[in-house]
Image (tube, rainbow, N blue to C red; front, top):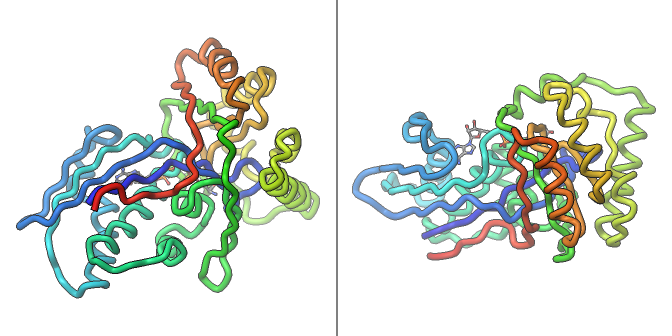
Length: 294
Ligand SMILES: Nc1ncnc2c1ncn2[C@@H]1O[C@H](COP(=O)(O)OP(=O)(O)O)[C@@H](O)[C@H]1O
Ligand SMILES: N[C@@H](CCOP(=O)(O)O)C(=O)O
């Protein structure tokens, strides 16, 4: 079987740990029964020998497969990775969602997307990347008694993403340690009100609200200080017509949502200003993970 899983951009500014969307940049994994286990990796991470020995996709896959079948079968895993590691593009969520969905498929057990999401939350405690990796589109999620509740909205073809991807990785776990344990009431209200308005703006396609509604005062500033050029990335993206421009997940990438016709202009302005960073235009994804060959 072959599965493809999209990259995701989480938080979208104020929606810390709850808002996210899926991007048409995919990891693909081919899995075949085999008399012994083997792993090959192409693309992102191919130079990392640890991924052949200690691979979280493989360990989650076997956990779930054995739980479902009670058998200890062996498989060959071929990874074609396009999602950069630790850049705020949800690489770990793509691994978790992909491993769970493919374990169900290989075990021959039907599972709803909701049940795959509820397994995924056991491996990644915040649902803002795993929900769009499962459903595609824009997602707003909560976790209640260990279960994820998500509402999704299809993303318009009239929108594209301009992503600035710095060379420097930022581990999500490490980046979370930069944040305080508690916040002032006024900062909480600042984010709550904007995350609510942002969600309403996505659902009603009132894109002119995105810029003002995507401001955050809980996590971006502390994280962006690690790579100060990111402040200017936002300025240039917005000046050149981006609808919103936010730190992607915990960084280090910077996400700008643009009208399709403005994508080139925004990307060229960012490339001219930041020759040292990768700047890419992506479509949005409305499908979530897909089993493309069974
Ligand atoms: N394709 C992959 N195969 C195996 N492990 C991966 C893959 N992509 C990411 N990972 C694991 O996830 C970690 C990155 O997770 P994280 O710091 O949360 O970054 P991200 O923002 O990309 O999700 C990597 O160090 C690696 O352990
Ligand atoms: N809400 C999380 C999102 C992390 O996203 P990632 O793509 O960086 O893993 C956070 O901000 O920590």
